Image 1 (cartoon, rainbow, N blue to C red):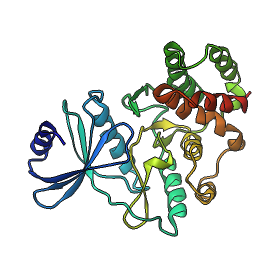
Image 2 (cartoon, rainbow, N blue to C red):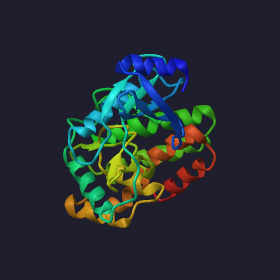
Image 3 (cartoon, helix red, strand yellow):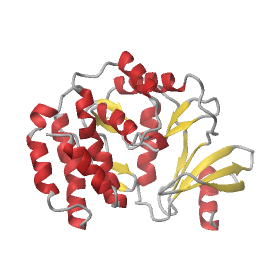
Length: 285
């Protein structure tokens, strides 16, 4: 941790830092386990190249999830308002999954989604990873998913050359089928970046949600992303389904809702994710 970052954290918290140890786990930001002068442990995320309001939006998203009290979410302690860019959170130590981890996760996600959102979108634009995520509300989920999620990342991938030009016609064909493929229901309160790496295991073995990219949207998005990279038992989805049954045809829409996180990965990392998008598209009209 640099002296500049140390001084900024101490100034924000009005407490001296006794010790700081860098921890692994993040692909984008640096993480530190910090001991304050009174012995309090906090977790600090920092990124000198972060967009100016990245951590402010993450803090607001964590608070929005916390309102529901559905699953444990780290408490926001402080956030920088400029450079150096950092976020100070409650430190939640890591444990081993409790025997009821899957049940708690499934029920918690059902409660989170049931809490709902005022509209398809959110009060502010935010980020998924370091990519800007537009949240201006739209009237229907089909409109929102196309115009705020898929189209911006498709354009970015095409413009950068990460995606082949043939994708334009293929996605247009997909968009033409949205009236039959997309099912509308009231907006759910979404984590928005719900892969297994963002489901932390707390000290008592409980699931904790971290690193959100929140908005109001179709709840199948969270569930599809949770399936994308594996690591979650089918038991969690079964418990969710009993608590908050999905609309008919949900299993056929998994590939549709995995397109967004896959496009995020194409734009951030390229490589094999291009093929993953094409595999998802092959399962859709």
